[in-house]
Image 1 (cartoon, rainbow, N blue to C red):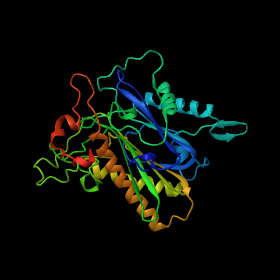
Image 2 (cartoon, rainbow, N blue to C red):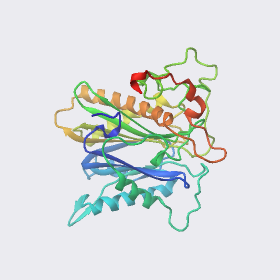
Image 3 (cartoon, rainbow, N blue to C red):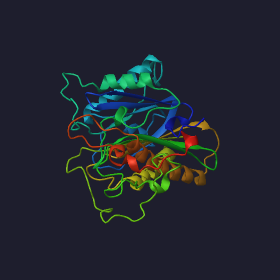
Image 4 (cartoon, helix red, strand yellow):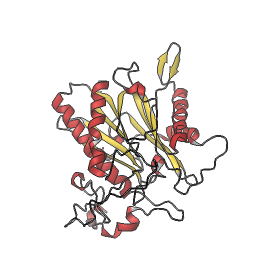
Length: 341
């Protein structure tokens, strides 16, 4: 059974943890078995942990999980909580007699969204990471204002967490999970339509298509401001068997989904990152043709996940908080046929 989610790939688990008063949270992606992984960082203001080991020439062959967190640099602690949970399960890279879980992570800036950030000596993100790992499961999971997406925003609307999946002609599955805390916006001008509209499947984010005519302000550049309070984070996973170099290329290609769905993106004040992982569950050669299709569909999934993240988001309950897409445009969604509920 497929859910149009990252967990459509067997052996991939997703868990969220967040604090409503904090208006921030963590999302953990865990693998049943170590997954080959790499990363591409195209934003100018990234915040990361243990990403250097994902370079193709580095020694560690696989990762046990990946973590996305709010909290700016404070959120890097979340990976420690995930590592602690994995260690309790006896999982990790064996160094002598000790297993060290390999859990790279990345953070977004959500410190100015109205939530209570005056914690005491210890920031809450280690605990949130542990809780997210404990909550990780296969199958369906919630989108929108959850986990690392709880405090996310864009230039004009509440951000959120989205996911999407696709099947290649060769039978490989590829899927994306994206937390959208973008410098720019995912909608066209001041209207409800999505930049990702050409990539939509079914009515996963409203089935609006393109506007009949593009508004005069469609290409106006709108941003949150002139501070690095942004970052869109993506995790792309496939069940193909890839090398680290091939995973790196998959991450690079998947970044095209940011450009499909956000304007602007990859800016000096963004920390835009794509992690790419391969579980190797389908053991057959991934030809150059197959790799190209995987990268193309990965970019499509990233674009779709971005729109889904905003489409499913709810506004934060604070004075001056940005509205959600549904708050502002929900009335334009075409009604579904009665047999679809």
